[in-house]
Each structure stands twice: as C-alpha cells, then as structure tokens.
Image 1 (tube, rainbow, N blue to C red):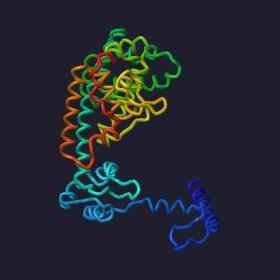
Image 2 (cartoon, one colour):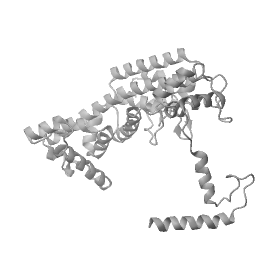
Image 3 (cartoon, rainbow, N blue to C red):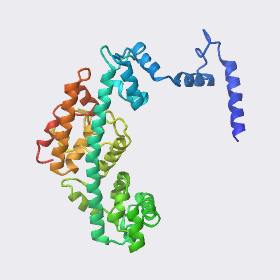
Image 4 (cartoon, rainbow, N blue to C red):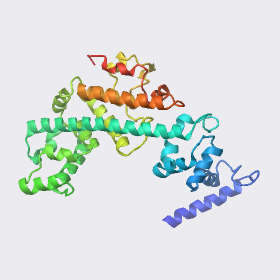
Length: 357
C-alpha cells in the first residue's frame, strides 16, 4: 500500500513538472501554482538549520537589529533557556511587523526581562490555580460522599451521575479511569495501602490522584442538584458558569505546569459574562467584551469568584508587586502595553472594590 501511494505521488509529480514553466533565475521561483515542487520549496524555505549559540547571537545583532551589549552573557542565557523558548516565545512585543526586525533601541535584556516576568506570573497563577483545584476537589468529594457514602462502588456506579444521554460516553470514560485508579494503580502508595488494608478507596482519597481536567469533567457529569450544592460552597456561582470556569482554569493550569508562555495565552473557551465585566465598564466589540473573556484577566475574574476573599486579596497584592517590579526595571516595553497582551483593563485594580459580584 505504501509503495502504491509513493508511486502515485511520483507519477503525479512528473506530470505536474511537465506543466511547469521554467523558473526565472532558477531555484524554487516561478513554479506552477499546482506544482508539488512548490510545496517542497515551501518546506525547504521553512526549515531552519542548526546554528551555534555564537551564530545565533550574531544573527540577532547583524540581521535582526537587536542590541546585545554582552555576547558572552547572552550565550549563557541561551544555553540555560534555549533560543526557541526565549526568542521564539518573547520577541513579538519588540518586533516591527513590517520589517520583521527589532524596534530601534530593543535589546537582548528586554526579552530576558519579559521572560523572567512571565516566569514570575506563572509561579503566582499556578499557586492560586492549585488552591482552586484543592477547593473544588474537597467540595466534590464531600458532597458526593455525603449522599452516597464512602464505598468505592458508589463513584464507580454510573447511576450516581447525570442521566443526560449526551454525557454517557464521558461518564463511561470517567468511571473506567476511576476504576483503574481504585483497583489497579500502584504508583501511589496511599492507594495501595487503602486497597490492601481496607479493600476500599473512598472518593476523598482517590480525588488526590485526579488531574484538574479530570476533576472538571467529574463536576460536569454530576447530577444537577449535587452541582448546585457544590456551587453554593463558592457563593454566587451558577452550575453552567462553574463548568466553563473549570475548563478555562484547566487550560491555564497546563500552561503554567508545562512552563509555556502565559502572558499572551488565550483559550478557545470563553468564561461567561459576569457582573464584574459590567461593573468594570469593559468595552465590547459587538456583543463580546474585549477583555476578561479568554485572556489572562479572565483567570483573575474567575479567581475573584472561586477563591476565598482573603486568598484573592493576597493574590492581588502579590500580582501588583510583580507588576511594580517589572515597571521599575524596564523601559522599552511599558506595563500598559503588557496589559493589552494580558487583557487587563486600565481600571483592573477596582476588581476588589465591589461587594456584590
């Protein structure tokens, strides 16, 4: 089968080659728009050869107009972080989109400062994402066991989940995963201990093994009355809102856990419109708010609803400290420009001003 496919492709390539007009100047310029060789040329142009750290520095200086005052230090930084993670991830705010070169005055230290700023952000957001995760984990296990008891047969029983037909495949997968954890998993000593000593692993034990994504799915598949009881633990949050909040937080948690770029990350899921969007007078593009829907500020809004008040106030204080330190140390990328990337409105600090949200 593979040989047949290759033969067909080669045959097609030969026929298309006959239809091509000779390229002006040779090389890959001027092929027919239907040519396979055009595709191969594009691939060749897109591939990037290996170059040494020193060559990377020279390219940034001489070809891209980036100021590098200490090449040796720059090499050390690239060795520790990698060109792709540092330059590929954090160059964009400093690039002229027309020339594809760095803006005048941009220096290597600006990119490093932005990388370190993002690293601090990840640490802070991850800390409080874990607190939300811990809280929802505790609430689910409490309300489920309050109704069904501590036997593992109960959380392995599909009748104890939502009856909506559209959720049945997801519930089956969830139970299969829970069953594997309860009866087969040997990676966690406390599971093996509970299994051997009590022949039962209560939900409040098994919950510690679940990822944020799995916890989010479990909440989504619970009966509506149990979802409502869990939401009451978080104040004024509706069931459908909680489902979206947890999905968005799961995506952001993964970004933080895998050390990916955070400040510019946007999810494919929007959080619901909230009273906070309205009270902060966030502008709209059509019917959609331009900030706080699928950007980093959407996580801040979600924290405002899902974290205890004291935790949120501490989070905000620590966030302000990170912002203030960055603003004092850097001049080529202003904090207000960073706010645009992160989806922060100029009056975002007023988020703690309102009692009714």
